[in-house]
Length: 301
Image 1 (tube, rainbow, N blue to C red):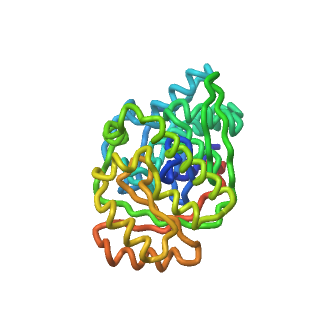
Image 2 (image 1 turned 90 degrees about the vertical axis):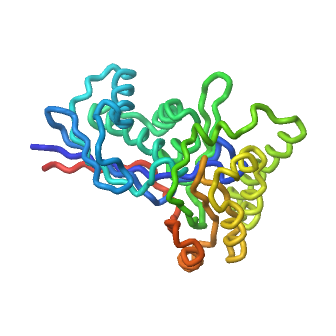
């Protein structure tokens, strides 16, 4: 009897402006894997967002799965992995974090590791390098995370986010490494104090569900957006258009080049339709907040 594990992982947006490398939010755009056991490894991609040709050993899911199996000292059997993705690569929607979370879940279910949510968050954050995207994909909802000097990861996870988002996806990629190069090596003290105050207020407003206030602070970032704006196509145009049509605020999604607007849930569809008229070259989508995080269903064939 053959068994198939279906793994669903939400994409994510990170930062929301000043919540740099610590605030993440799971979005209702998904990476899905159907995993079955077979004699040799095979990846089959069923999405225009995934490359047609790939070498198994270079595949991120394969590499992370092997790393996790080694860490827990388990023998990972060969799998056939059918992949479906709504997440364009290198656009700032957490495609690599969701692949890492999916790979951890693959080993977790196939090798029966029984990892809890905290362990999945710690592992995926360690591999990804920071907790924002990865922890949001694991938990769902809004995640604020940081690692203490002793290496312990702490997260605050709020599932209730009663607002929606519009994502503006341009037809260009921006690698995170390139976006990181644009940032200054250090920040002057007074400047850093302002920047962290804006971050604190963003988080406080989101937790209070005061989205009008959160939107103002999404646009007040000092940590990264002033230095990356020139890398983002139509940065000012999108912020102005979105504001003029009722968005609470707009920021770069992760490292970009996608932009994301915070909007009242009841208005998001009309907003997307209007924005698409102004920006015909963009893929503009309404995205709800995913509150489930990574999910697995098992089918016995």
